[in-house]
Length: 259
Image 1 (cartoon, rainbow, N blue to C red):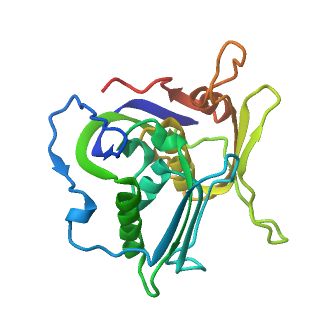
Image 2 (image 1 turned 90 degrees about the horizontal axis):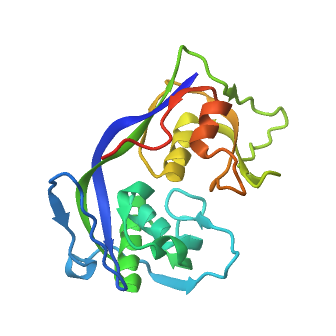
C-alpha cells in the first residue's frame, strides 16, 4: 500500500516574479532572509542568444520545448505555446510551486525560436534564456525562503498496485499522455515511468513538494482516473482521492496541513 501524507513542512527557495505589468508581493508566516536580484541589464554581461524571435502563440498550438545543448539540435532552441511560467521554470531551474507571480504567467503563451552560439553549454543557454526574459518581458525577481506544506509518498508493508514496465519485444517506445474519460474526468497514463518522473508530475499537479519515500527503483506502467475539477455536475474523484482508491493508498490528506 501507499501512504501520501500531508503534515510535513517545506522550507525552501521561493522565486517571486516582478513583471512589467504587475507586481505581486507574497507574505510568508516565517521571518526569512531575502536576496534581491537587480534587473539583468544592471548585472555583469551575460551570454545571450545570437538572435531570438518571440511571438504570441496561436490558440490551440501544442506545447513543446526542444533543442539546446545536450540535444540533437544544440544550437537552436524552440518553444511552442510556452507560458511565461514555463519559461521562468526552465531558465532558473525552478519548480511550479517555487514561483509566485500574477495569474497571467500561466495563461499568456508564446512561440520562441532562439539561435544559440556554437559550443555553448547548458548553463550558458539557461543564462541566455534569463537574459531574453529580462530584455523582452522586463522580468526581475527576488529569492526568499518560505514554509509550506509538503506531501510524503511511501509504501506501506511493501505492497502497492504498480505494475512494473516490461519493454515490448518490438522495441516500441512507451506511450504516455492524458485522455478524456466518459464520466467527464481524465485518465493519466504513465508508461515506463520511474518514480522520480511520477513524483515530478504529481508535484506539478498538486503544486506542492513531494518527498519520495517509496524506495521503488524500477519503471512502472500506471494509469490514474481522476477529475481535475470535481463539482456537482462532475462528481468524480479528485487526484488525492484517486491515489487513495486506485493505488490502495493507506492514508492521504485531502488538503495539505496548515503553514
